[in-house]
Length: 150
Image (tube, rainbow, N blue to C red; front, top):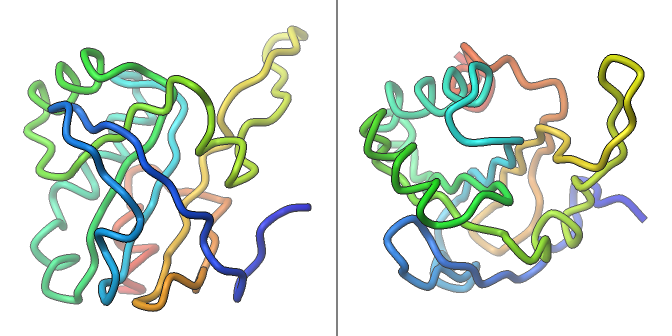
């Protein structure tokens, strides 16, 4: 069953690009932008990460913590974050627990080839851990604007 607005956000714990343990409970009382993206350092994912980076101060000033998630490992995330000066944690979901719990690990089709991958999706989670908004049609270049509603 797919997650919906108003559902409690599934609890998680994962390592970020620096090997730190990051848990949903660490952000109690804060709003979270939890964004799932297919792959580090690819054009769409880079545009999305840079949109969030360039508007990071505005996100913070509105009380949002930003967390990116893909199934890439910590080393890949570290290279990606360093290359683009990303100021927020990128969580390594190498065991696919987060993508499964959030329902974004889906069958995809490219050039007639079917494979499993991440459906680019952003969950906006409120201070109580409830899903406030789910953005499935992500505008990678203007993603921060989609979240902030500007």
